[in-house]
Image (cartoon, rainbow, N blue to C red; front, top):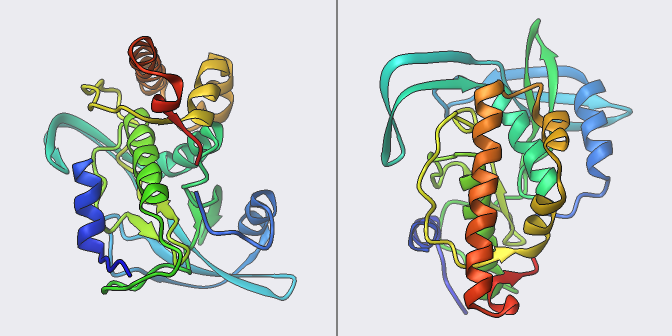
Length: 261
């Protein structure tokens, strides 16, 4: 039996899609938009003071996380994760953009997130991930190292495209089914271009979709949440990623480059 803890999961991420809902993502999104807010409280984690919101609709009660923070730090040198950059936009809109990008790629790793007004403030309302592993050593039944590594490599692809340099154990959740859930993207999607990390394997569906999606598809899905420079940077990162994949395909068989999630 393999024993793992969050620390070891994070080390694997540095060294190197989702629980099954009884209802569809569309139904989840409708619930988040239409349910009555029956309670909310400030969460103890997160510098942007996210709110844990309790919702009720048609006799069903669920929890969600609301973020309405937005700020531009244009003249400050910001340290994010292990990297520094000049200027930063911190916005709830990037939470919605992360979900929309995840849907375009077909990864299913970002919880359902919608635009919603809560207590008079517009922001991002994200489905709360309930079924996560506790923060102590556990030996999950049915754990597959190969399946886990595929998910990790899919996270790398997503974080490169989304310019997320702030992935930590606190915003990479693992469900009891050992599926990765990605949260906290308010500092992603900056209008910067970062060096490509040495990625060598990719989820085939995500790459196939990146090849077929038009710029208008990205604009339709993410244009309400990214400004012009941020969208341009995302499209350039897509271009560089696909060029990297094509170079690998010239040197390696397709089955060594792609995997199915």
